[in-house]
Image (cartoon, rainbow, N blue to C red; front, side):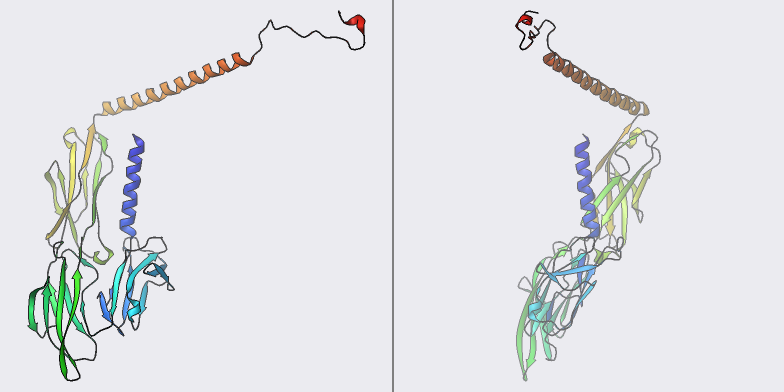
Length: 345
């Protein structure tokens, strides 16, 4: 009974620690693609609630980079700098990889490497510095979504998990007095703003009159921790606390009618995004039932100890009976060496 509970607790603890401490690699400027010769800063972003005086390690495609600072700078990128970048804190937690593509060409379609639910996303059809550019056109899944125009940026508002798509732009770039139509492609992958939401309780089983506190814990990317979250609580499907900034719900005095299933809900971005936790079940016991339960437990343990003692005693008795000589066993006749007259003495 206790072992499964312990395993569940250990699993949840590991999940929580991983969610809280996992860093994220961010780019500045915030583009997933750049052109050779351009500069970019990579920063290891850590959850602000646990940030300490960490030291950092950096990796590209799994290989360690000889740099230990929080921010890693590429002053003049080459195509060989293309790769999957990760950082790791001295706490031993390594980030997921973030892809940087250094393009050897004249046009790239740029977008942020980290896109979350509710973001307003900008795509930029960017040309090699020093070359005048003309009009641009944008496509999504091979369908025109912004016709030829002087703007080199496309804004997509309030993206969600269904916004994942392939995008393409064509740009007219001047090269030696002639304009060439050059194309570039990219993709958008939207991540959950709140990947983990759990409802925790100070006690799953309480006696009448006990105080119980429910805590709605939401984990959010270090890149979006300024997002305001509001929380609501439900009992057997009915709302018991409206949305507020408090992530706690307190039951000051448990009663039988407090038994049942509890859930919490988190809202963000002016309620455009909502997420519900998994339900937990609370049991309320009478004070007498609780005492009776403790008594039964004590009696069971005592009985087990007595049975074990009885078994040990029986084993000791059997062991002694097998190794002690019988009382009527004949003793050997002693004979005095060299004196025949004493042989029958």
